[in-house]
Amino acid sequence: MLSPGNRCKEHAAGRLGTDAEVDALTRFLLSDDASFISGSYRLVDGGYSAH
Image (tube, rainbow, N blue to C red; front, side, top):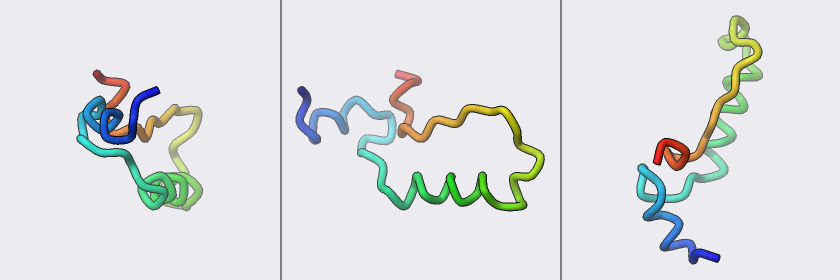
């Protein structure tokens, strides 16, 4: 298992995300501002999956 420091190096953002960052996307998707978004898949992974 990688240590937190090594995991950070694997992310394009160079750090792990915070609860607040995930919360922000969740709140947006639950808001009326996202009323036209449906059936999409959003990753909140700091660019890790693009690696």
